[in-house]
Length: 242
Image (cartoon, rainbow, N blue to C red; front, side, top):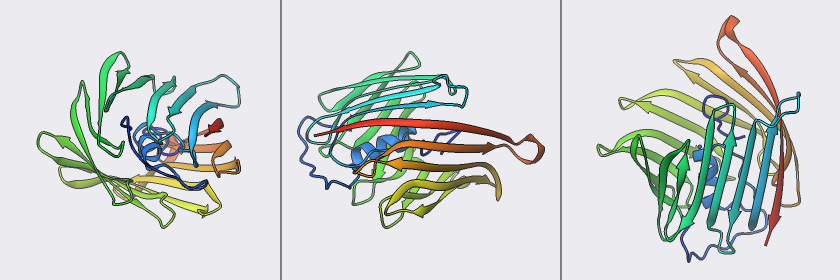
């Protein structure tokens, strides 16, 4: 998973007119993948089903995504036992609405199907985007305090995320890709605070003809010094296309 918060490295409208090349990643899906921590498939996606499990075999993460022909997400369901998170969203007009851990959640969408505002029990968050539609900044409202900034490489893949506290960078995640153009989910990710790494993730995947990852082996190292723990997971994804 790309940005699993605490384990790994987080918009549709009824009528939006995106047209995506076979290998391109829909920014609507890519941004939701960043917001909710999953691998974004490429191409003109119809449905996606992802399962993650440790070597023991039991499923500890499951994700179901549905997208309409215009590239706008119609529903997203995630069950993450490791993070004790259940998310259920479906589109109603220009809003993705539903629940997260039993609490109401709504994502307001703009004319390009991008999430412009999130409201939940913690308050309101607003989003800003780069010209290509990829997520740039996240602001906590009503004060407009920036809480995250995202940078990407020439292939549109995230290579750095800065997380802010009191207008200062509190932690930073950097991603290095083995071959970003041909193997976009083979990477090493490091998150650090005060120049001290506390999370490292390495991912190696098999891909379909659209360069969507269909099977990934992920190794996580969390903690500092003697408190470090290593976890290994297998992620399998099935994707259908229009």
